[in-house]
Length: 304
Ligand SMILES: [Zn+2]
Image (cartoon, rainbow, N blue to C red; front, top):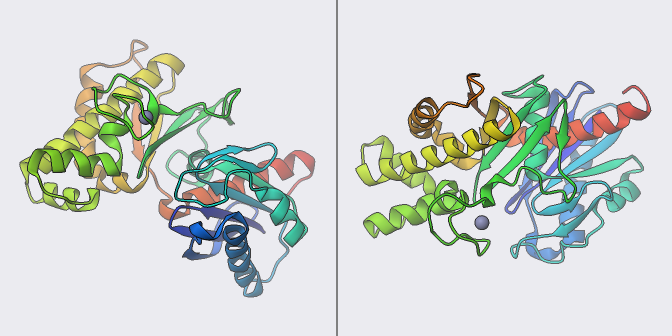
């Protein structure tokens, strides 16, 4: 068996998988984000031990997906958001390996999301794909020639923070980034600007479904921005398969019309059709993707 762990800002999900990445069992617990790295990894390990206690089988390896900038080779966190205490610098894989006695691997959560969707999800088996997560922020990940490409600095695919999407101030300090139009936080903010009403992105989606014109306009703008990011990526890399995940993508029915309209209005010069798919694995994607990293690393040594 392989284990996958998704350490998010509010919840930590652990899955146990078969060697072909079918989920056998899963458990989610709150992330003790203000307790520091040791408490967060301990919570994940306790959860994994509960799963192992109720499932017969031998654990071969563990993959961990975590928010922030990570060193995927050395297995520790480089940069974490303010919502995590004592997380940057924490040696995640060394701690897991010492506790369990099996190899462990660490990935950025967006990269793990795409690994999951390529392994068992909406873009299963694709050799080239781009993954975008529309959550609190906007993330991106690149799957090239059958493998994850994370670039010389681990930041390839960071589509959320490229400019060209207006002039609004971004959470990162920049201006006009995709994230200012397409993240959950931005959808809430853009709706509040238009109406003076505070609402979460989910509430804005509910209002749009009931025909609220301001809510519809905010989702339409988000969809058009996502499509422009897709067109830039398709033009640059000749990738034509895209998978969109994250909480905002649950309102895919609201995003899809403006995504399609924008793609149709400005098709890539290659003439190749672009496929844009909503994510398939839901809240399992990061954990299953992290497990698939463990499988890939282990199969380069021996057959799992
Ligand atoms: Zn930004």
